[in-house]
Length: 126
Length: 189
Image 1: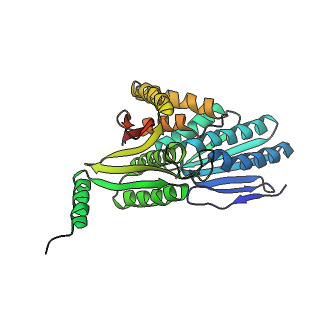
Image 2 (image 1 turned 135 degrees about the vertical axis):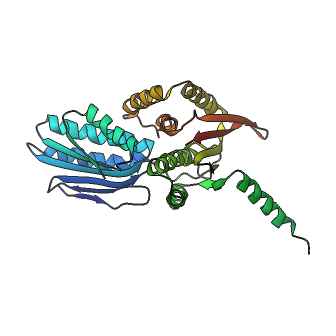
Image 3 (image 1 turned 90 degrees about the horizontal axis):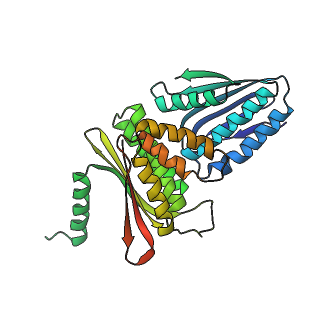
């Protein structure tokens, strides 16, 4: 399956899904005008890729300095897709990067790991 | 030589802004490009002023929520009402600072039909403790994750969570347009 790369803009993150290497990353800032439109195709590609994976180790790096309220819901949907893939027999590791001073980002990461308990969740304060 | 009248007006405007410690003010049309450009300027201003990281993020976050609410919900639009992408709508945002505390204020006209719904949601938020706000945020995140909404419910909760005082708001009737009210919202960071 073809890799997915979307360059960052001032209000949307760099998305680099290297499906061949099973290494996915989202980094930057996320406050697009329409988060559902921005993330819709990304989540679809992710789900298409995950559906093809069996017994695969997959890593996802998330390094977002800031995301707006409508992006938070889309992140939730990404985690849901990853959690489903873990249950289907894959091994998912999420690296969650946040500013060491930023409690809100830390708490949001904890929220996600509380809800999606099948995923291995590694917190990185930077 | 007498000072031209427009210079006096400009000086008076700047004097009021100075008295109220305004560090950023914009009134006009809001598009996503304009918001991204303003967000850049606000972020840099706060960095240069030596504001700590968490406060910067809270201010930045509330600023973006307010500005994007104007893009999506202001009743004064340049783009057709049915257009949902690349919207351009009118409003204003103001950031002022006093002894390390910041006030964010935004204003935009809003349909009176929407106003009542906003009033109820904002009143409910004002009655909540911070723990209740965080709890409501978590619930709303899960409840809204599958809906197609542009996210205003979660947006208010995001601002309320980052505000050191309850969000303040006002609706003022507009004489020329009975179907529209001017909506003011204030967050204190």
